[in-house]
Amino acid sequence: MEGKGKEKAMSMTPAHASVSVGPDGLTSEEQLYQETIRQLQKTYAKKIKPLEQSYCFEGFHSAPLTPQDIGSKPMVLLVGQYSTGKTTFVEYLLGESYPGAHVGIEPTTDRFVAIMNGPEPKIIPGHAAAVSGDLPFSGLTKFGTKFLSRFQVAQLNNPLLSNLTLIDTPGILSGSKQINRGYDFISVINWFAERSDLILLLFDGYKLDISDEFKGAIHSLRGHEDKVRIVLNKCDQISQQQLMRIYGALMWSLGKVITTPEVNRVYLGSFWPKYKTP
Image (cartoon, rainbow, N blue to C red; front, side, top):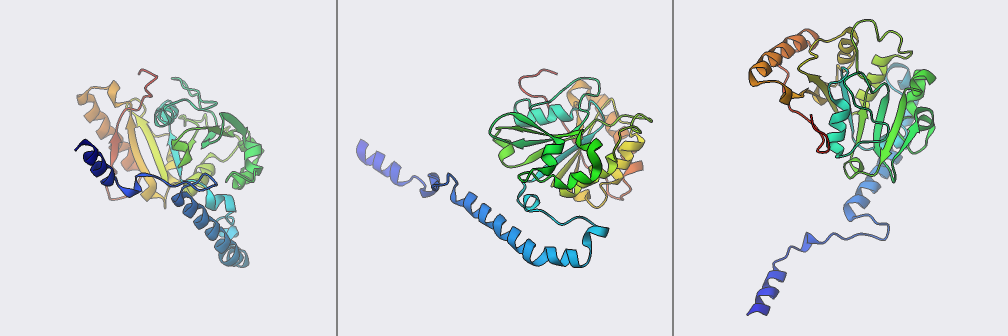
């Protein structure tokens, strides 16, 4: 009886429980994905790119796509004022710190950082990343060397990064402190927004004012409203009664910047990595 029970249990095991892996180390789904990307790259280069070049599409919209642009992973862009928890949010998702990450109550992230998957933890400077044939950042060269010196790629071997790329941005200050950045911050945000699949605007309960540069960054997201999600972070640090007042104040501030008749949904949360305490 015991043997028959085992045989019955084995016969009830789903056939798809085992995943077949090819000689290249890829599953059938991954092989299908790679082949689809190759066919898209060929179709674009043969059919669409010549049409864009004939009509000077780059002059009034955007430059032609590279094979790296088409084959790149989905991108998530984080935008917010300083110390709203953007870098900590990234560490929460990854479950670990990434190379070059700095967290503090003062403005710490002073550059754009693309967090991507890689065999080992390392930092690729912006100038090298922009000319690399393996990375989708060649379009950033138009923003000049001043920007490229404020851009870097952080690679580490993390399961989450095998499916997406995270973009951490410099914290936005208030007043006239942004004037001397040396590059067009708003245009860079717009460049990443066009290529991102999700855009997170992070706020916290102590920084609800929207500076002129932050307002310009939000305005640059027009046309990408379907990608934008608004997150009110660090909600564990305020009481429930304060939270209701802060939520109302945030909606009032956003109403002056985002001119749409629909009410924006705000996601409340507090994102701290397990190895850190608030």
